Amino acid sequence: MATRAKEQSPATTGTAAPARSSRAAKGEQTRARLIAAARTLLAGETAGRFTTRNVAALCGVSHGMCHYHFQDRTDLIVAVVEDIRPEWIAPLEEAVDGPGGFADRAERVIALLTRPESPDLAHLHSALHWLALGDERVRESLDAEYRRWRSCFVRLFRVLAEERPGRVDPLPLGESFASAVDGLAAIRSLDAAVDAETVLRTLMAALAATADRTGGA
Image (cartoon, rainbow, N blue to C red; front, side):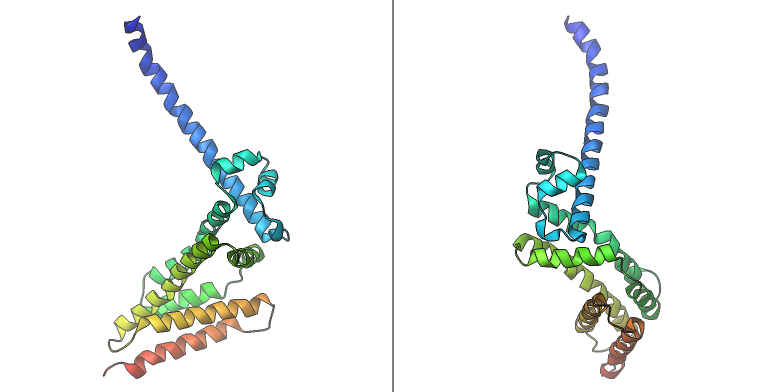
């Protein structure tokens, strides 16, 4: 009997691994569907009634299944914050960290920033900001994402500082540009008639000129 058990164990082990892999893949799919459903609710007009129960219903799974993947409502919101990173931070990182000097990178950044933002993403950002007002964990998560976003502009002006050695501090230049971009996004969200490209190019040129005025001492 012992010999037979040993002979059967490899086959048993061989079938168990694919089964576990299949369950893990199904679990990841369910988690992704829950995040997608959460995004849909947050980007819509029902953000004020955002609950894990409503997310589960929209996803077509049980409320218990939602809490199997996410401990609570905040966990799900934080997952949404991380989920949208490839749509607004990753492209900016690629534009800044790509090849070329300051002029080439600045051109890519301006082209990216003047591209129309999808209405869903804009509404999602607004909902997340609103939720962050009453949830410290959401606020910390969103703040971390914005710090990562702002650091892109600091790295951009660090390239300029390397090209024009002197007393240039890329931190205030990058932070200034990031703040202007943030303000411009708020203005554009109101459908205000503003030439975003002209504004950004003018500001970029003015900040770059600062390097010429302060360098070489």
